[in-house]
Amino acid sequence: MTTEDLQARHKAADDVPARTHRGGAMRLLFGPTSGCEDGLFGVLDLRVAEVFREHYHPFSEECLFVVSGSVVVRVDGDRVPLGAGEAIRIPRNARHRVVNESEEPARVVFSLYGIAPSPELGHVETEHAPE
Image 1: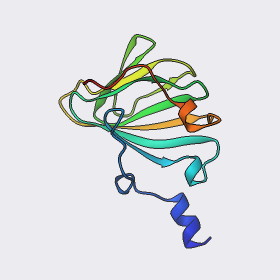
Image 2: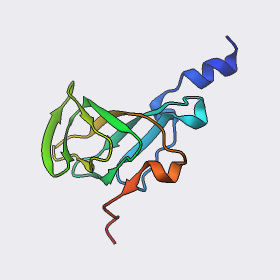
Image 3: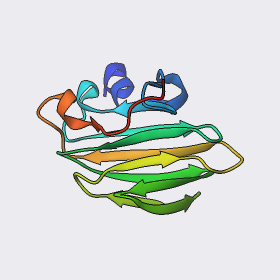
Image 4: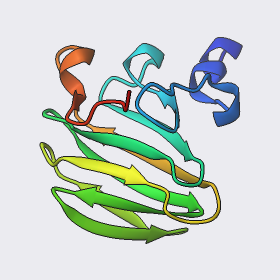
């Protein structure tokens, strides 16, 4: 295995630049641009009272696993509290958002299975950023 192969297969979450335009700090560790052709894998960090805005995935189902802290996931309007060590599977086309309603930061691992034909089709925003 070459050094390049290892770099493509091994990453530290905190070394990956955060995307913050949807709320929280999302770090995509693996996806189509890093050789993972069938899904996405990353972490979402939410500060106290922070929200990752509502959206859905027409081509993917998503699994969330809370590593630390706690969050509330709303799936098609249903409120699902999750603490560290708990997970949820979100079906394709289900509207969902993640909120940190606790008094401490939360870290959530996410994985999506199934890839959209193009990136802009894979994540459909249903809640826009506050002005």
